[in-house]
Length: 551
Image 1: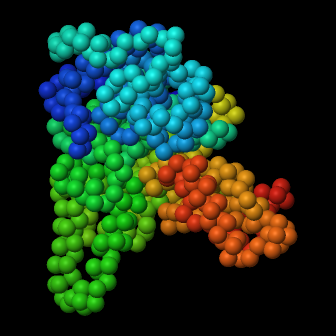
Image 2 (image 1 turned 60 degrees about the vertical axis):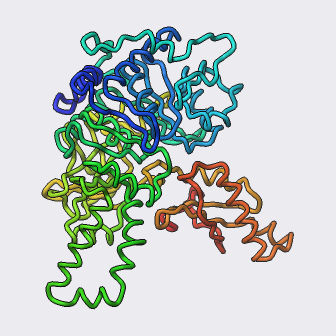
Image 3 (image 1 turned 30 degrees about the vertical axis):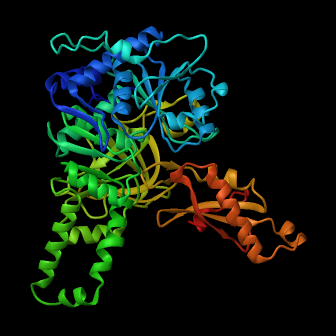
């Protein structure tokens, strides 16, 4: 069913990209924080054309897949935009995926070229690759590997052939609604779903952000969320780039100390974050100070509380670089305690909501309009419908439709049919409601999917499938507690009793199982501890574990 005209985005991604490059030609565009790689918009334009020639000589056709595997970096961004502006399809892969899962996704996507960090390519079994023809280093853009029968020139030779004059620059035609990106929500065979996002899906997110979020040409932004994930890609990379900003990529894990240093140097104008980063600052730095006896006593005195509140607010704003207008939080549930505290000190933050299938934005409101506990209002070119699970209930499953919504899952018509109905409504699997002012509230999930610390999708069934293959594990259930994954295990008691294994020895075995399990999992999906259950899990008549009893 064709979407209503007011729910489509007709702005052409590549035409707007060309316009951005020409208007900001001499401005700084992409830099690796703490590294040597840095490009102006004009240098990006020249690199795009060089990569286009490389694609052409490699006989890459429009719509074919080009994979990118690496951490946040300027060359990652170059590879991404060069691919879409050529008319090919990007396949961004999270660097935390296991090498075997990477091989599966490269084969499933039929990717012919891979831009990759050399250290991540070392663990890949090239003999198991069915379609890949060449791997390009994201460090120096040189050839890392190619099939013996292929003789492909290194990219620097193409770069020397490209003229860098602004007046002669243009990008090829790519359709407004052409396929742009194939984003996998997971890595493992049987669980991986490739979300098909069009140029218009991406552009709708960019246009909305430009119209609504406080960011302007020439300003700076720090990219520290994974840009292989839709949240980081859309709002720490694409939106700032199309706005004419200078993006600094943090390629190392965003530890609190490194983030504080980077914020102080980059002084970003807008900050995107997941709840965990803000919550760590609060629970480790702010709350302990507020609970000191002398501070508690001073807050009782008239006028003193306002002085203390202002000082905390000023220190927190300074910690984020002192130059930002707003912090946008998304990707996971936000602590109510932390939210209440930030509101009490008038800290400029807001909470949004989205999912990979929407590239990702569904709802957002600027911080001055933000309603407590909400995730903002539904964005332009999108609409929402609440379908109660039981008649008369205010809350129900959230369904969305509009310009941001994917066309479907790659090579998976069954999953597509289950998620997208005939009228174009995407069934999010989230539970929520809207108030009379149009604010959307999330109050649970009706799917089993969990969210990682940076908004990565975690499917507990994947982890459980690996866990039940380990010694003495009969049943397993993975849950999220305080932003950490915990595995609940009911042991094979018959075997335990037969071998007369003591309780302490069983705990040691389970700890060893946990370490083995984590070796097979990406960093964001690692299990922090195993809890041994004294009884079997309660089950439905179909013998499925009643997950809701243990979450």
